[in-house]
Length: 285
Ligand SMILES: NC(=O)c1ccc[n+]([C@@H]2O[C@H](COP(=O)([O-])OP(=O)(O)OC[C@H]3O[C@@H](n4cnc5c(N)ncnc54)[C@H](OP(=O)(O)O)[C@@H]3O)[C@@H](O)[C@H]2O)c1
Image (cartoon, rainbow, N blue to C red; front, side, top):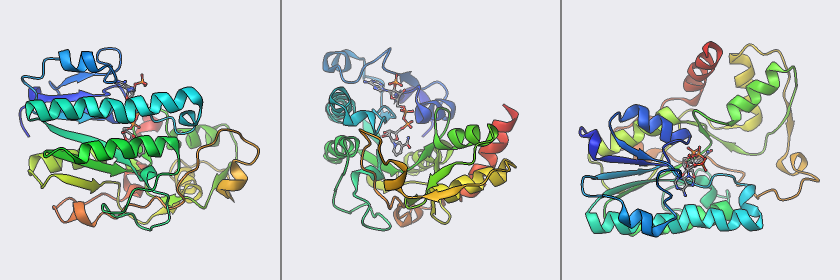
């Protein structure tokens, strides 16, 4: 893909959106302040004539927030209704839609998750994202990328744990949810790979590669890499959330099977390598 001016990044100020803007300088971009994709009239009024590819990084990603009365409405608006607005425009103007989904569309009983696993979301967030997946799958020209545990510019797990460690806190961290981190750099590299090589349209799992690990083990790796001398205690999901209200159910097994994207010639980098580089950058920022 060479002509960045025909690319439109939606949700451009989020973790993934920022990484996409860096990858595609000169691309058109918008976030909720410039184009609220839940507003059908605004989406239809947008000038789509020069757009060949929509990269949809917009989403309602507050998993626990989606369990509230207002959050449920907001999640469905952004993750499903807004997707129907984009799908309509993609169909009308013959645009390729790249859309991002999540392992939360599954209940976490299958390990690892393959692209053809039946949908079985546990939470409101997962249900609203699953609805978006179904809409996108109807488009002839789509890439639906399912990813997990995204780390980029913004509030994320690595930054939270670094913050705790640097404050001298030894955290108890969930050890029964297992998966792999996905650095936004890797997600962007996968998107660019699929587009550049005109890979077959469809659904692809994308995360970093390497051995799957629990949040607790990932925290130990973060502390080792950042030379933080704090211990990490294993806890269970049930124990961690005991007494807390409004917590969304989470899949325990989040590992994505990466064979399909590997078969296109894309080799996911080990999450441990990208974590080291990320922590190095954080230390110098
Ligand atoms: N984060 C993860 O761990 C994770 C895991 C698996 C999959 N994913 C998926 O990966 C994708 C990217 O996630 P991310 O972490 O980059 O999300 P993020 O940082 O929360 O960014 C989402 C962006 O979408 C914007 N947005 C929300 N409502 C919008 C609307 N109505 N119109 C236009 N823009 C809107 C948000 O703006 P505001 O901030 O102003 O609301 C934000 O800038 C999402 O599809 C997400 O479901 C994420």
